[in-house]
Amino acid sequence: MDALTVRKPDPLQNRAIDAEMLARFVAFLDRSPATMAAYAKNIRRFYKYMAEHGITHPVRGDVIAYREQLKTTGHKPATVQAYIVALRRFFEWTASEGLYPNVSERLKGAKIDGQRFKRDALTPYQAKALLQEIERDTVNGSRDYAMLAVMLTGGLRTIEVIRANVEDVRTLGDGMVLYVQGKGYEDRSPYIKLVPKAEIALREYMQRRGALPGTAPLFGSASNRDAGERMTTRSIRRIVKARMRAVGIESDRLTAHSLRHTAGTINMRNGGTLQQTQQLLRHSNINTTMIYVHNLEREANDSEARIGAAIF
Image 1 (cartoon, rainbow, N blue to C red):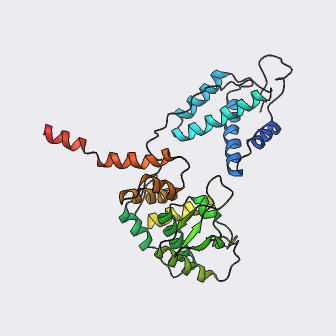
Image 2 (image 1 turned 60 degrees about the horizontal axis):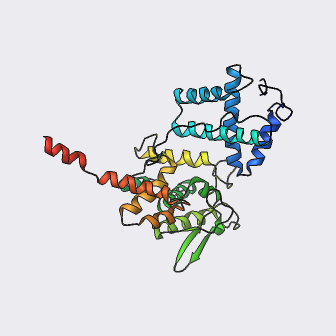
């Protein structure tokens, strides 16, 4: 495709934005490999848009038109926002390096409802049914049961499941805990408490696997190609969705991440405080945890019933 060039000749800006520059920008971010890959993917999406529309000298109107196309072609608000955030950061960098003017300055993304999660939570009945229907007399079954039990009771993210090692299960006080390497963290200082039934399930699974080094993944892949290796985000999502479908739970809004929301929701419904739920879910910002409060307050709000009783 044609490379980006400036509209007017300028010693500092007369340079094409090419693959090498994109690599420099991604390296400049100094973020996790997954985050850097996401930024690169999102920016390449804009390159593709320019190629499709014959744009070689993008101006502010072009990035606005790009945003509007994203909105009108079935992309969810959160996806649009991710694309625009990456684009803003990219042009901020090109401007700071004197390579290309910032044509996306103060560009708004998509409006996202800050009081709702992208995924729904399971009801306690659904969570119980999900676990009860998993067979536990095979390696795969015992792994899936233990993994889902830990995710449901500890609110684990999929990345935290992937990163967990055998040695991360340790004794603390009078119980067992799992130390967690959370999103964006290098260490394993936070931990979740393993409730007795989750601990028993985890021990059963470990016994089936036999002796393993401490650095081995806690939940290993069972595929022929990479048996015993770390699972992937895709494989965990696939397993959770398959187990949900097996008990008749089918919804685009119920995914592996729903198990985390289930933990937070059930905790607060049963007396957990805002601060306790924040600590359980390892939220760095309590405003994220506040979404659970807003959701539960709305559930308890019987305004419609009161109005209906008055009218009818």
